[in-house]
Length: 134
Image (tube, rainbow, N blue to C red; front, side, top):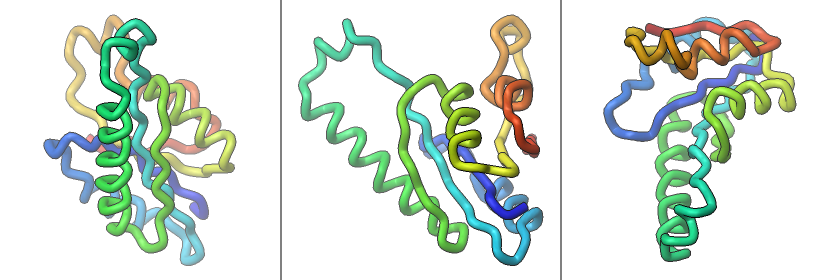
């Protein structure tokens, strides 16, 4: 693959090394990498109750953490976007000619069967190859 997207969660509990290893293994020599984090959109009614500097500080902190994580892949871009995780990943992949998404998944629980996990949504809607890490 020549244009690989690796979406990650920046919560300190998820190990991204397996996804990065898979990205390197599946990449062609000239591959470009993108390490993406999607901030879930905060509803307007909740935003109104938060001081403006709190959201800006959180976004800056996430952007820094994302840039640090992206150093794990050579020359990786590190965009921080906002929206619904699954749909935003699919849209980003489509808009940026991604040819492979490498996404981590967890063992599905009952709520995932009813609502669908982010990984399963990406698998169902992406127009490129999707490699799911479990």
